[in-house]
Image (cartoon, rainbow, N blue to C red; front, side, top):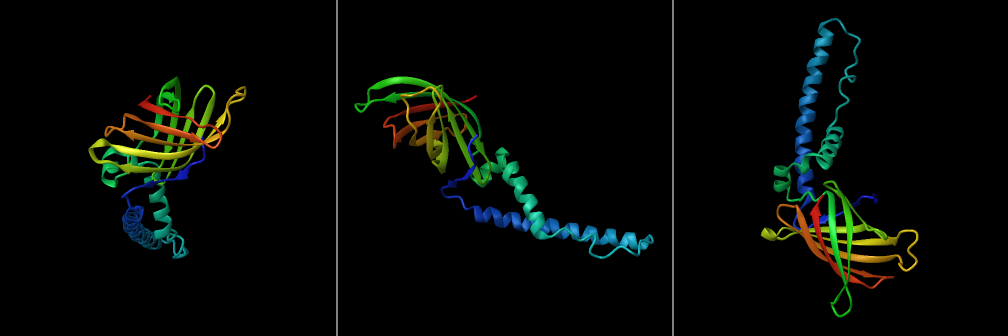
Length: 207
């Protein structure tokens, strides 16, 4: 898989989510501190007088926030109800691709098949497309909510031919895909440049 990189979600403010997580972390840290204090008192009451006061106080708001954010980033935000509230769609997974390339006159030249693997967290994403002859990896990405139409994914990528493909050259590309509201299919267009000037359409279905 490619290296995960940050992506933007138009209209979504991650700072607001971070603020709510900070409040939650503060509440959890406060509760743990109270429990630690009670535990310390119990230990002292049972004769453990040598226990330093700082032994049971390693939990800070910062540490709790780090743990809470990690869990949220990897797991919690993908829960469907949470994802809807947060406003970030979960498009991660394996997708089957039917592609069609066109010439300069918009006449179809050849059809091709591929598989896209999308690794997505709350903050980062990686889009990896494989065909029989080449593979591409995303370098930038953005998601645009489009109401009842679904969500539009816009990303740029680097494409490299597989060994044994002398007619193909490494190139850059741009892709726009509109995912259905159910997030089970998508369709859009791609454009290549910087080594290979082609364009076409793509249709995706969850595998």
